[in-house]
Length: 71
Picture 1 (cartoon, rainbow, N blue to C red):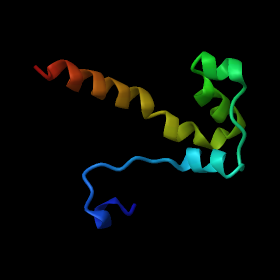
Picture 2 (cartoon, helix red, strand yellow):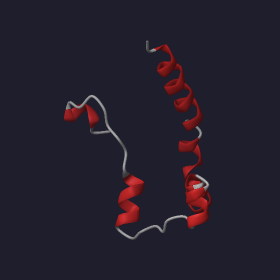
Picture 3 (cartoon, rainbow, N blue to C red):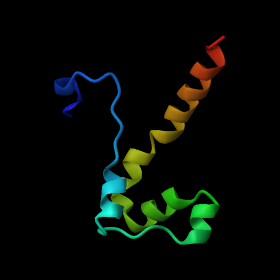
Picture 4 (spheres, rainbow, N blue to C red):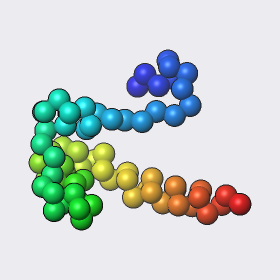
């Protein structure tokens, strides 16, 4: 919400990282991290995140489409 006031072109959310570093939330088990399922662990332990995660496939698709358009 503060991005416009900063005048930055890009903003990256790091809230989950701060929670982990501060010791507020544990990381997923190592086997889940190796399999790329840390997001699933976070969703299972924090189910209120499901709405935010619904936009991820659309975002990934947009990134792929734009990458393919670049010469």
